[in-house]
Amino acid sequence: MSTLLEVINLRKEFGGVLAVNDNNFIVEEGSRVGIIGPNGAGKTTSFNMISGAFKPTSGKIIFQGKEIQGLKPHKVSRLGIGRTFQNVRAFQSLTVYDHILTGILAHNLKLIPSKEQYEMADYILEITNLDKMRTSVVGDLTIALQRKIELATALATKPTLLLLDENMAGLTYVEINETLELLRKVNKEMGITLIVVEHIMKVIMELCEKIIVLNYGTKIAEGPPQEVANNKEVIEAYLGEESEYA
Ligand SMILES: Nc1ncnc2c1ncn2[C@@H]1O[C@H](COP(=O)(O)OP(=O)(O)OP(=O)(O)O)[C@@H](O)[C@H]1O
Ligand SMILES: [Mg+2]
Image (tube, rainbow, N blue to C red; front, side, top):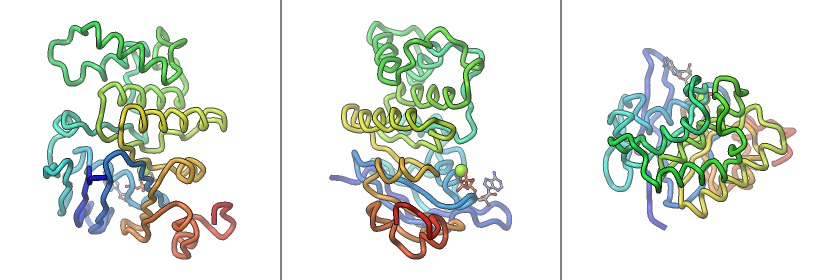
């Protein structure tokens, strides 16, 4: 496997708050990586730097061998990094179908979809199980469904790397299992590398091959799920003694 993303001494300060503390990690092409840690640990801030929403205070972000730190979000997106938002930002007035089309057309300045692009929209609706809601207006749907629409729209941009920030929050057990199956499928069949931030440990343990743990901005552990779940410092900082995974 080769390296897709490398983060080197990545740091973000907000005034006096150190949100991300000189972190280093590597994401291999085709892999599924989880990032966990308590509230305020720096997970979303790390995503915001990788996706171009925030400029790092210092450090490097290397994607496919190129330095991308400080690039604007639309440039990062065009390079093949997609994301979803912890606080849903789906376009409220669009239908589900049109929302997904915005993803498909995101990198196409012609704005008139081709036959292949319409087929891609149908494919995305089908694999995300949103087909029966294609004419629903996004703003009329639950937040959990809007998260799913954000995921579907991000997939529609055909990213090489997809960053998911608590995309399964609010889902039922059955819906979580469906989304897990979808993510395995997009990883295997579409070849999309995944970085998943999630507080639902079941998702992280079942989906990810590697877990990175942040605490107060600092990486305190990194490794395979079982090893990380048994790490003393991780149990103290985040999982707790009662964790069913330790
Ligand atoms: N735009 C901002 N301005 C100022 N401080 C910020 C900003 N964004 C994040 N922070 C601070 O940076 C730290 C890390 O926040 P971040 O949102 O990255 O945490 P998180 O790990 O995603 O937490 P959660 O699990 O609650 O989503 C926190 O102390 C937060 O208050
Ligand atoms: Mg967050």
